[in-house]
Image 1 (cartoon, rainbow, N blue to C red):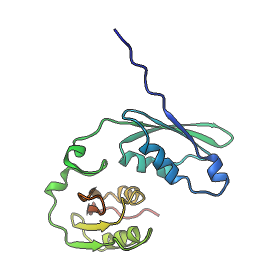
Image 2: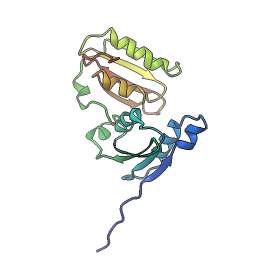
Image 3: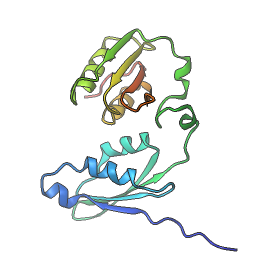
Image 4: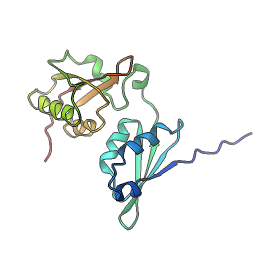
Length: 181
């Protein structure tokens, strides 16, 4: 009976990029995009990259981290079983109950704006809404930095790209939470 070797995690050390003053986020996302199904990403960073945990959770990865000395951290992002959301065309992290939300009471077309303006406008609009209200937004890209902010404020969301993959469509249901300062 043949045995299958477990996939070796892909390793990415972002310390040199950070020392050079570069932003490593795109390199991390590129590495994630190159993973084969079931493969993990082992990230080495000069700090514990807490904001990345939510971004990766929204992409279907669980994080396990440990300090490795000299202030450096090793974080392994391992894929978790895909939810039904994939078959419905929703992004991982999307609320499966979105089909039962009421119609949006506010719609924003933010496709022409550069980051971080779409995120700022969405968060401002949510401040004016009541718990249970739904906002709909059109964006030029997936708002990966918005998702942790929505979670912190206890909002639910569902999002995906349109058929040609040019516009990200996002529904957000106000959950009643406010920003914690």
